Image 1 (spheres, helix red, strand yellow):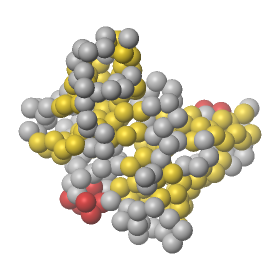
Image 2: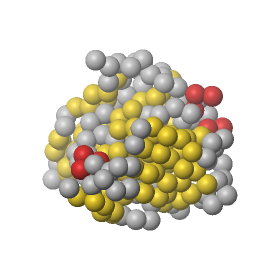
Image 3: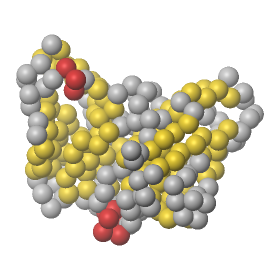
Image 4: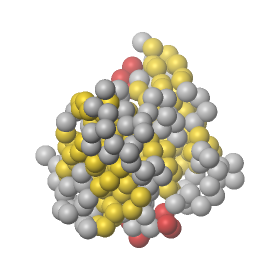
Length: 117
Length: 114
C-alpha cells in the first residue's frame, strides 16, 4: 500500500533536547512538506522540499531543521532553539511541488504529537 | 496576517440536512483551493478542490463553490451524515508561484447530529 508514515505517534522530550521526527513516503512524490498544528489553529508550514537535496523555509522555520537526502524521506529536527515545540506535527507530500503541477493536492501522514516536559 | 479565514469555529446540523462551510481569502493571486477533512489525532484527508477557472466543482455529496469577486468559497455537504463530523480546513495555493505551498484556514468543526 502506498502512503506516508510518520513515527513515532507520540514523543516526549525534555527541555533543551533536540528531537527528530521521521517522515517516509512510498508514493514516488517529488515534493514533501512539514506542518505544525496548534489547538484551534490551522496548519502552518515549517519547511518544504520540492526535490531531493533541496529545501526551503516555510512561515515558521525558526528552531527547526530538515534534510532531504532521499526522495522518500524528509526528517524534521526540532531543536532546543524552538521556544514552544509542543504541538501536533504533520508531514505531507505531493506529486510535484512546482510548475503546472502546483495544482496538486497534498497527502498527509498520521502525525506525531510532540510534548515537551 | 491571516490570508485564509474560516470565521465559524463550529457548525452543528441535523443528519440529512445540508452543511455549508465557508472560507474567505485575501490574496487575489490564489488560484487553486482545496478542502480537507480531519479527525482528532489523525492527518487531514483531501476532499475536493477547485481551480479559479471554475465556479463550481461537485463530487458526490460534496460541492465546492468559488466566488472570485467576493474572494469566498464554500463547501456544501448534502445530505449530511454523522460520519461527516470532523474538522474541515480550507486551503489555498498560488499556482503560479511554482512552490506547491498551501495556506490553511483555522478550521471549522462540523457536528452532524443523528
